[in-house]
Image (cartoon, rainbow, N blue to C red):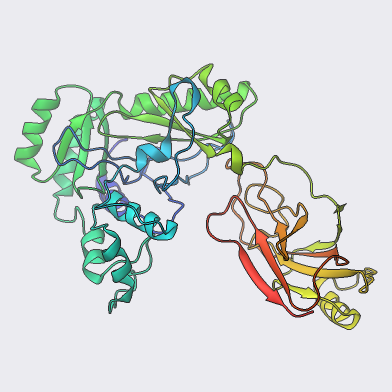
Length: 433
């Protein structure tokens, strides 16, 4: 990174703000192709104990690069995934090491809020996390983060690092660019932090004198070396047939290249291991039990048939009468033949794609069938293909599906939309036939 003029000052001050809703987004630093993302790592207060992170842009294809990357900064809560083979670490674990005040809640949502608060150096005991949403809060950003905040907490988070002499910081990092490992705002401690590969003690003394409040730690590689490693790995993995996303995480205990793969299964991890050093690379991707293999949308399956998938919004619901079907179809698929439905044996379900348009893949959905479980119709709506190769969309779309209703209970029908790649409870509604 070449810190120059006022552009870098503005961009550094921008990325030092706390991260809003996950997934996280990095911002490019002018003229470098690198971006800094204030990470949520570490719990120590000494210079050598701090662990923070920054992230670069994603390269989804070897001949393309985008300006945005996403990293899950939420710690793994109440769940311990199997260790990755060949000694690789999950990037999300590197980014989330704040120590929670007291035990984690049995409620997964509260536990996630506790961990996010700990990762950002905020009070994180369960009683406080439950109390904050009940308080009188006036800040428009009080609910803009991954956990509710008090007005004072919003102010503290959004002003971290504001009193640092950014002009002096820019000048100093430019002076020692050749050995600069990176710089970031540590979320846990709130301290601006820079790292160097050489003369760390001398740099620490100089920075303490010239730029009070900035922490200095050791780096294993310079920013330029990390960027070169990132580019090389992406190209080599493409040659092996694996398209990945990528980034750079800069921490106090050393920088690593983050590689995003579709799924963290053993064959994929071992493929990366053929060319990558696990000490210099971390991995992110879907856990194997959450992964759905890519493939086209089927026209029918056991007990169901697809009537239509159109780039038009429809609310989640059921259609149980011919007249209702005719009315909905006119707007949903104007000019197209009305599908034949036998409402004595079938029920029509309308299912939104949640802003995914008609995309089949990581950013979209695919209807994979349904099951009757304890009297509830459970619709399987995965996002196949894992976490990479994803072009973000925000477009209307909906399915119209006829399901075999011969075994459904009489009266109201409860339907769930199960999206196993999306955290949180399934969407469930009860409809009157």
